[in-house]
Amino acid sequence: MTEDDFFSAVGVDRTDAEQPDAGPRRRRDRHVERDRRRRKRRRHALTAVVLAVVLAAVGFVGYKALGVVKGAQPEQTAVADYTGAGEDDVVVTIPDGATGADIAQILVDADVVATAGAFKNAYAANSNAGNIQAGTYTLKTHMSAVNAVALLLDPSSRSDHTLTIPEGATKAEVKERLMSVGGYTDAEVDAAFADTTAIGLPEVAGGDVEGWLAPSTYDIAEDATATDVVASMVSTTNTRLSKAGVDEADYEDVLIKASIVEREVFHAEYYGQVARVIENRLADTDGETKGMLQMDSTVLYGLGRTGGIPSADEIADDANAYNTYQHAGLTPTPIGSPSEAAIQAVVDPPAGDWLYFVTVDLETGETLFATTHEEQVANTEKLSAYCEDNPEVCSGASASPSPTAPADGE
Image (cartoon, rainbow, N blue to C red; front, side):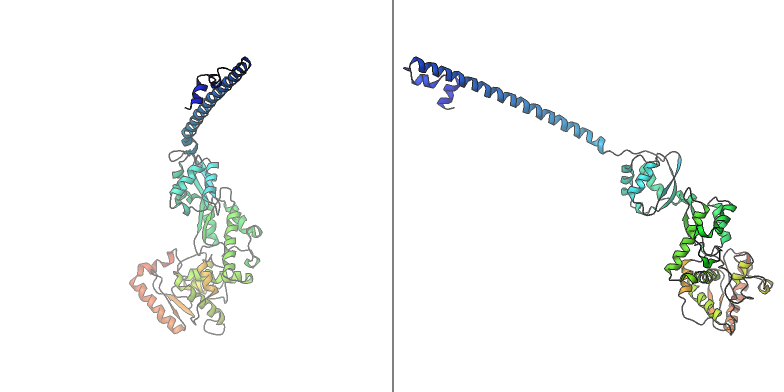
């Protein structure tokens, strides 16, 4: 502290101390100045005290506010979730292209999970969550998000809402599936098959859905009609034919050929060769085959069967419009719904001059191809030998649910 500061602090006007002989007026002026300075010092001190109090108060309030925010933060960021496996059944549909966030909102809206955040966390934590497929599921209300993700990955959750059409299925078989799995009535399915405009059936089909009900697994939404499902099947067939590069005018012929290919052999490895046999036989109008396909599968279709071996009398029956032993050319319609592989085989068959083929092992499906009737006879003898060694297999062929064509093209 300087000397001047000291005198100011104790309230002594140094001017008075240094000038004892000052006159009355000057002394009065000095007293006035001294009082002014004292008031000024008091104001400064009071201001400092008030400022200190205010800053302290602000700091305290700020600290408490920060404490409140920190204390509340877990409550704000915690994600509400149900616990357990859920309560009541609820049906939800996941559309094509749905993201994890989309699925989360769908489940929240259906009251399956408590919050979208809970599902997103469970979705991110499950490495298989990306495999969740579009479709209709039966879930539970009030499920934990983890259980919801697990159930969406469980095929059984969709089993009541999916319809699988196997390769080669006939329209009669598809109808049975629509009724037993889809729950549609006989009349509803027949109406769907007949409404060619609503199902998008091309004119080349001639009004018959046979062959156009594409093999696949279809999702049946809660409000889907039989017409909706059938339309989806026809649309799939149209897409496959277009993708294969088939002209629309040739759609029906390709489906007929592919449906025969599908029924004639067990394994796709033979599809191409059978497709070539069909082309060669159709073209061989003046040769050994006289343009006849002579396929057992077509005869059986005309008889209302899908497996086994037709008898000699059945082969001789020319009243069967699908008897290709008696009628040249293609059958009136496809004899089932072919797979994409069968369609592709017909569109691009391998080169070859085969006219005949025979399945020589009814268990493995081994099939041999021949270019002449003599070769075919020799190959057929191998089937006879097989049947002698496996009579239980050959005798049961007529009851087999799978198509067999042991000696087609004879």
